Image (cartoon, rainbow, N blue to C red; front, side, top):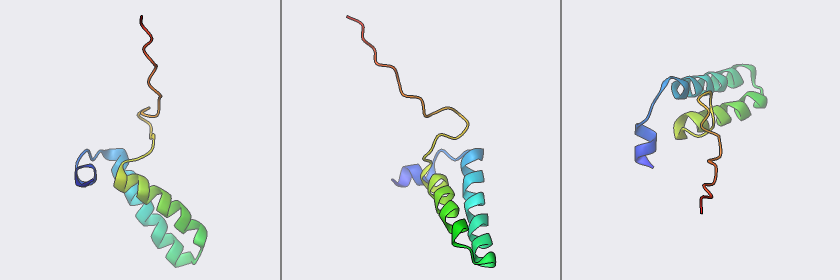
Length: 67
């Protein structure tokens, strides 16, 4: 877990984290709970490096059926 939090940082992961923090401040300023839901989503993706993003990592590997 510690490895995934501290390593493999890239631009898209940093953007997700910054956007999540921005949405938290917007939620506090406007007192809208709607912003907190999206902030939690983007913070989770930024901190844990989960999600597809634009690099196409969501593809399911094809099963190799050679006999």
